[in-house]
Image (cartoon, rainbow, N blue to C red; front, side, top):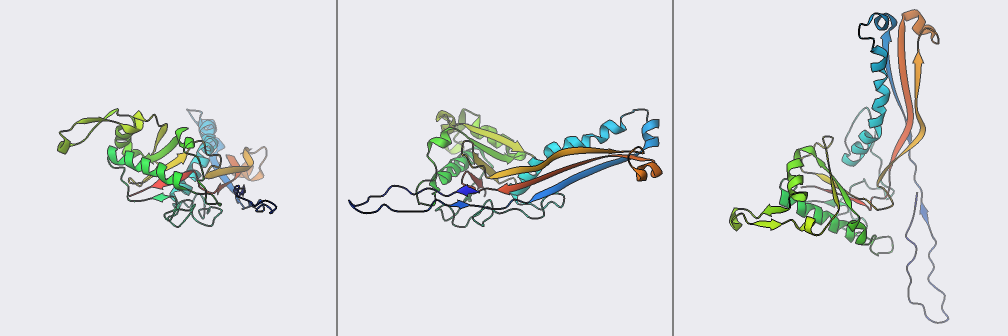
Length: 275
């Protein structure tokens, strides 16, 4: 859960009682899911294998759990369907999707910044600037700015599709940029670099829409997406010594299981930028 914004000071007449607002918390439920995998092989194959690595390679299935939270995170931010992962994408505590263009935080377009382009370096810079502006427009429950501008100076992280790596490098690494043929290809300074903005660019092949990026405020306390581990990953090994079924069939196997849920907080610290 999370606590709503406490009341702000207001002018009070002499002899009058102060304004009163109960301090309220919003609670919500995060469902834990059971995540499992099993790798099975014949004992005969293990004993006759020239490479002698069947069991070692089978245990790589356990290492793959290291990607589970990442896969879930990207499924949630992109709101995509994956039959191996979440059946339904969790909504935020305000009842809206993680990213919504409905009125939210005092802004009519919510936390979706549309009409932007990341297909050019100049467009990418403008899109990121507009994304930061949108975040600073957000208001708390009392109609006051939800965060101070200084929090952006502490840094933002931008997730973008891997196919836009060239445009990202031009936008946020190249010190001089071209104004184009109409301006005789004059070189101008990169205003984001000159301003000393701390922008971490993170490309990912998990983002498949080439015109959409996601921005997160690094220092904002409430992270928009979080995971909770109800029971850490554990391994179970079965062979003839501890399984009648395996003894009769000649099979051996390694099984993994973890109980984990993923949830969405109030997404004040993030926007998505799209065409």
